[in-house]
Image (cartoon, rainbow, N blue to C red; front, top):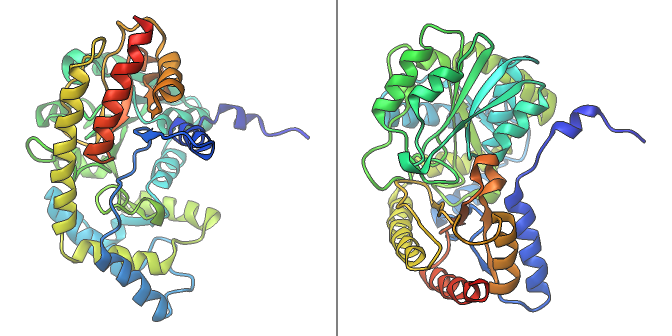
Length: 388
């Protein structure tokens, strides 16, 4: 039986493949330190769990409106608008099972075959996968270590053509932890304000920032009506398995995206949406505690990697990843990824999992305990003695 040709254009997310390999080794009795998956190791705060249980008992087990329960959409509108200092109405909000559907449906609704989409490289691999899937042309903009993995705005200007239909931003950034400055965002806004170009602003890590304050391009004059904000609950509230995300976008686009929801998954689980209401309205002590702990772990892993010969690691300003330069180690980063898994018992990801410009780098997630991070550092240093 033949498959549709478009399936050949669809990529994957290597982190889950590496997780499966690591789990297989654990099944064989190996001790593996997991620094490959972008998932907080904290439990979902108890008050959020209890809200879901209450909702189940109250009968939130039926279909809900395709774009989300009004109570959650209104809560998101209030909280997200306040965080970004922009006016947001319930009608601007679309709730989805996880944040990835906002990428998928936003690109499906806005980008035609033959259009061009500029996206960060290295960057979250699903961007390039979905651009290819819809038949558009992916145009990578390279994030450079010497710029703290931020955009070169001048380079971006040269990449924009008459075919450019969308620019994808991700700040704080996966896999590098880089953060776009307000001045960079202002320059980007100036380039696209008078052009027919959408901005897809992936802001899933907005609450995990260590230096300065988060700033959204949607808050700049004339940009909210051109911007799709992608956000969710997975990272801030340790709710990865709950699958709860949302987009904020102009109402005409929200209506198009809602039509795609109806044709795909109908709606997001209603009892999980009620947990989302509690997450946003309830106490925020746990997310703040998590960010403080991530900061501590960041410093441990950055300082530790920089003490290992062959590693050079910047101190990221956000998210919970480091992206050290390992180009002086005499093997490709794919080979190094495999070597560290099988020889050191440390699961990490090659920078090329995030695009061709990731060669020479590894990504480590420090969403793990300080004890495990220190264990990983010791194992890496010991294993690399075999290749020198």
